[in-house]
Figure 1 (spheres, one colour):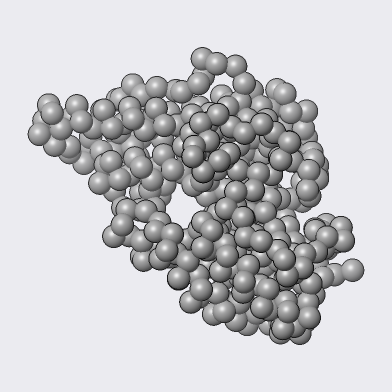
Figure 2 (spheres, one colour):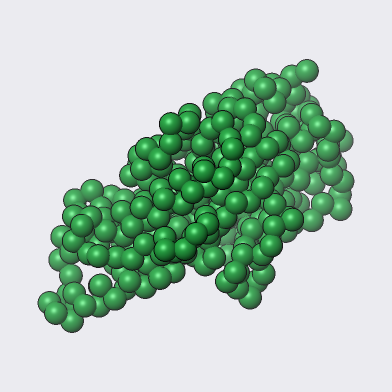
Amino acid sequence: MKLTILGIESSCDDTAAAVLRGTGEAPVILSNAVRSQTDLHAAFGGVVPEIAARAHAEALDLMVEQALAEAGVSLAQVDAIAVTAGPGLIGGVLSGVMAAKGLAMGLGKPLIGVNHLAGHALTPRLTDGIGFPYLLLLVSGGHCQFLRVEGPDRFVRLGGTIDDAPGEAFDKVARLLGLPQPGGPSVERAALDGDATRFKLPRPLLDRPGCDLSFSGLKTAVLRARDDLVAAKGGMTEQDRADLCASFQMAVADVLAEKSRRALADADVTAFAVAGGVAANKTLRGRLESVTDLPFVAPPLALCTDNAAMIAYAGLLAFEAGRTDDMTLKARPRWPLDETAAPMIGSGKKGAKA
């Protein structure tokens, strides 16, 4: 039976709503509306949680209205409402959950809480229909992990970052080099004119077995290289900045490519997929595609970054499986996909990385 799902996403700095119709095997995205908060946070060099939460609260009803209008669907035609219930910035997640609860209660529609990471993990199936099990590299601003995706709610973590996620590292490197946020696109643009071989940056953890990753030391190496340039020359030229960006980006690509080879050797899967905001980086995509002869899936750029279509799809699969939530649904800042896996080393004071 075809279902119509309204999805809501507000876990970080994008307020999104989408309408998806169909079955888990044949979904169609009717609309996918996203409002970015980049301009609101630009002056602060990163996302300010309090500003993000307020902006979500102000924009959620407008984005739902836009998504419904673009889809040509009324609220009465919606079968269920899916919402990101975590992980993410708690103020933003809470804004989305409360909006979804209000809609569900007012309309008498089922409510489905979705793990934001599951939305990313299932996106290759939404876009390309690949079968289970597949290996996913989830690589985003706040997360980096290898997952064996065995079903809509079955994820086995094979490895992950023990400190910064790649997206965090890109943002921090951008700040170090005076580039605008978000850092990923800024570093990628600057790297186009750079020499990736000029600076000999480390490839962390390649000397250790397994699929775990680390990017904090790489970020520190960029800081030292920048400081050496400033001490020697009194500043940096545009070419210096471009070469540093290219060298950093290549180091990240080398690490992700090698760790992907190791994960593929252990995963016993039929396909390799990449998802998450950092998956929009063309250099990284190209390197990852080259590591295997298995089918490689990289979703369209609009579905790599945070969006509500992926939340609607994860909600659709949950609804088909008979799982719904009630008004006790909680917003969760942390929510590991593989809850049986041990916490990552170096997860910090806030607990295990999701």
